[in-house]
Amino acid sequence: MMNKMMKTGLLAALSLVLVVPSLTTPASAKSKVKVISTNNVASKMYHGSAGNIYSSAKLTHRKYKMSKYRYTTWTATKRAVIKKNGKKATLAYIKSGSKAGWIYKSNLRAGKAPFNKQKRLNNTYMAYLKALMPVNEHKKSMPSERSYSGLAGSIQDSWGYNSYSDDEVKVATKDKDALISAYGVFKNHFSGSQRSSLDAMEKQLDSLEPITDNLDEVSSSMSTFSQALSTAVGDLS
Image (cartoon, rainbow, N blue to C red; front, side, top):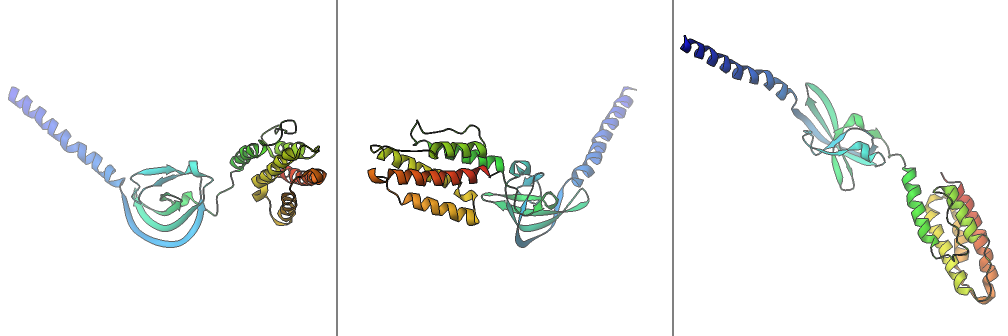
């Protein structure tokens, strides 16, 4: 009787060992990725905000999350067709700088990535504060807020109403150089006739070397330039 029970238990155990693989194997095999084809394509720019970027077309290792690179422009140079879970899909090989990998083509949108306006404002704000540092303390006006409007007000107040006495040549020189540096922070924000006009005013101011006899002219040139720059910066968004 005992032997019969032991045999029954052994057979039951063996049946479980045999059954479990038969249940899991199809699922595991079905999840594997088969690369059907890979070929080069003409370079094209894309951007995206969702999906994962993988190290290979087999999708075995995720390198990046596209959500962290929504303001990055990628260039696609390869295309792959894969089969996963019984369904075909298209992948694209994309690259931006040192970063590269494979992503589902459906997660990409054609064209350059949208502009990160907040990041640009933050970078511009910090660069402007650095340019403003040499300005004389009693003339320097810090931005009232981290915005283009705040920056415009600071430019107007720091350089728009300057006047110098005969012994302030060094002060005027520092203020002049600081205004030219401040314009350097913003100049790539402008284009066309606006950029040409501001460049001309910068050139005129730069050509003036402050001396005792021309401080009024330097002051006037700074005032004109700062007013035009303030207006242009205030119009940025």
